[in-house]
Image (cartoon, rainbow, N blue to C red; front, side, top):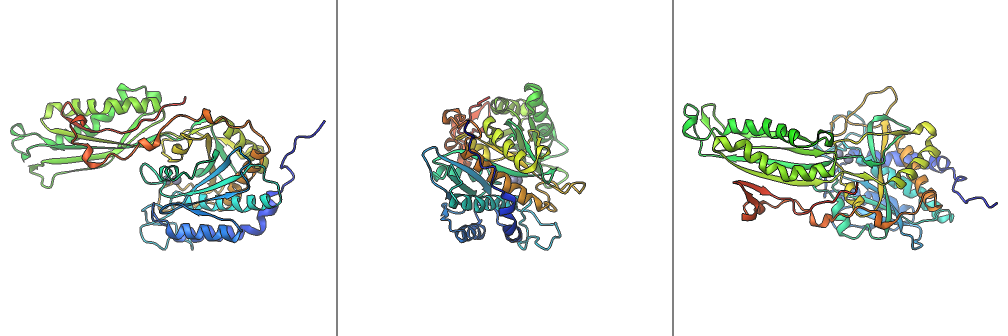
Length: 447
Ligand SMILES: [Zn+2]
Ligand SMILES: [Zn+2]
């Protein structure tokens, strides 16, 4: 009986050990020099240099970001490993020796770690390819602007950099999970996340005579509380619809009713179906809420990203790799979050999965993402590198069923764009007196 060939004999820990210090130094350098979306020029250069040092040939993407192929494409397509490389416009409060040197910019979402992990996996896989151990070709994808809306993933797709990739993996730092563990889930793992803006206008007037004008601030208050409340009663609560305002502005004097006011926030949703329903309901609800107050409402609902929906066979692959490298306790279940991730756009084209990489020191503090003091236990870098490299090695040996391209959910991200300013006044976008900046595209649920 012939044994199934495997990559079990390859000790990734041993191969990584002499390179780990250099990888950690790389992460700290990127962390100290963060760049926001579409401005990641230095970061792109540093990654390209590191790849060339390994004898690889990275290809720069238009603007920022890069991709790099490892091994041959035997016709079955490549396995993609994706990292996002951008930072956030936040002040770094970590107090570490490698804290950001750029005022107001910080790697507070761990994308410096993602970048380092994919680079490290690439280094190990390049060695495996040289030794003839890599059965299926790999493409490293370092994408720009994940934190932008609707996300740099769309730039990568438009550039054709995903062509030839048949399965895609990514890891995201998870400060709620201990280092040494990876959180996995089949199906939706993040949520739809859109930008919503409501602008009210009216004639303005004296606060002593609200009955002679339109009390705009009062109406804005009704929008702030009434619209989320109505949405929660019109949609299935199990869909986890969440409209939360982050900014409200109106007026300049205590005794003057202003002519304009605006409120902005995010609409998040666990299920694509409910997201689509909410998109249809919002104009009607905004209209009904402000109708008694004589103000004019203008609604801009800009689609952000759909949920990341993890493909089952790819989760099986990560699960196998996780158990192999981290032990049985190394793989833990994870919840669907209300966060948004532009990785979702790739999974509208090819099957794949996003795993959550534990970054918390056991028993230590939990630092939340998008906070100025966010930092990771750097042992997560070794974990992430071994996990992705192992998955790539196992993938080639047929550890999981081959992907069927037709199984990918049918979505057309090229049809989705941020609603331009001039959309709002187009006659077809005015319904019942409410101006609606309609999302141009729509995504179709696959489950
Ligand atoms: Zn983020
Ligand atoms: Zn992130």
